[in-house]
Amino acid sequence: MIREARCQGSVTVFFALTLTLILAVICTTLESARYSLLSYFASQAQGAAVESVFAGYYRPLWENYHLLFMADSAGLEAMVEKELAKAGERAGSYGFQVGSVQAVRTVTAVDQGGAAFLRQVRKDGEAHGLSSLLESMSDQATLIEEGEEVFAYVESLSGYGETISQLEEEYRIAEEAGRALKEQVDALLEGSGGVSSEQMEALKKQAQEALGLCGEDEALLKLEEQLAGRLKSGRERLEEQKSQVSASSYEMMEKEFLSLEEYASEGGRSAEAGKQREMIRAQAERILGWSQDQPPEELLKEVKEGLPAFSERKATASEEPKLLEAAKDWKGGGLLALLTDESTLSDGVLKGGPYPSEISGPAAEGLASKAAAAGYMTEHFGRYGSEGKSELLVYEAEYILGGKASDRENLEYVAGRLTAVRTGLNFLYLMGDQAKRAEAEALAAGLVGFTGIAPLVRLASLLILGAWSLAEAVEDVRLLLSEGSVPLIKKETDWKLSLSQAYKAFGKGQEAVSAEEGTWDYEAYLALLFLLGDGEKEYFRMMDVIEWNLRKEDAGFFMENCLSFCEVQATVYAEPMFLHLPFGEGNGGRYELRPTAAYGYQE
Image (cartoon, rainbow, N blue to C red):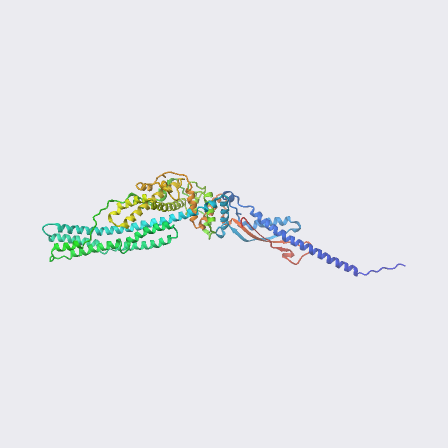
């Protein structure tokens, strides 16, 4: 008899439940680990994708200007998405699909005042040893600034001189009328046979003319007010310059300015001339009021005593020196015609755009940055005498400094500034050269010394020194444009022009006296002018030049699209493998990850 064996099923159900639980734990562990690795791989892939895109830096920009930028900010997201998708396909069990890519933050060459551009410019300058060299030139840049300030002072002297010359002409007319009246009175008194009625009538006509010339003159009053206004503005300007020039330069400028203020003071020349006119007017009115009841001789004696004592000194120079005449007209025919052969100049004109300088913002500053940028400008951009190859402007450094729309305008701007700087520095040299200053004073004495007016003689001397400085400056700039050199501070042996021949410097078509080689050549002066700039405009004009040059070969190149840094966030999806976990859930039950990566050339 066979017995049936019976087993209870509770053990089997327990085992199945236990196995299910164990499998759930194992699958959850595996899926959690996979999810963590999936997040890691997605993040790494995102970083690699961004780096891969930035590895495609714009080679023409590097080869020509030593700047590292990725040239297509507009295509950044698409390029990162493409690289990220490739990584997702190669990841096997850790693969993912790319949903979207978004640039969270980007920095282009023109952002933040061109900070990224300037960092690379500075790095290039440091690599070439230019930063330390140009930082040592900061004192020289201060000299350049002082030269421009002194030039402004010299220019103001011309304005004072013009007004004073007009005033002196008015004073001279009145004095000559009074002198003529006195001479006629003297002649009548010295005559024999008494004074006839006809002679007195002729004297009355002379008195009437003198009264008209010495009466209240609106034009004269206007000139005196104009001079007073100019001197007031000049004093305010001089006070501003006190902090912009050296103590010795300011002392010199103020000393000479005081002589001008003395001229226009209450007890000065205008007051003296006014008193003289009043005396002439009073005696003329006395003559006109004469009646036959009064003996003529008695009247004439009273008139003679009432007229001022006129100086018997006459002018020893009948015409203005050629130097002053030439200095007045020095810009009449155009500065470039004076300094260069205009037929050789570029006629390049800027067109197209807009360019980066039209969207400039506050720039990163600092002497080191400006020094590096100044060196970068002279190293990488064309200039007069070493022209660039652009189809637009070939005087590139001059454009960076001037920002004008044509080569000629930019060269004229730079040449004008150099002329101003050299005039100011030359004037300071002449003021310290006793021999040359004595020459100018001697010429001034011959020109206006007959007046006996010390401030006028002093002003004439300053005007002659200013014109001489300007003539030498014109010769200096000719030298610079001829690839020669001019020291910032001259010594006696560096001076080129004598006072008697200085006017010839203003002749068109003149060649430079000599083209000497030295440290302070045209390129060095351009760098110094750059150091005096505000930075912002110059940096962006550099980008203008780079952009229009590279667009000759690549019409789609824009500096505003050149990326230096970016932060990118992607959205990627992955399918569960062992078990669907409740976190990181996205569309269709897939995991949704948002890896972020940042990369920059110098961030």
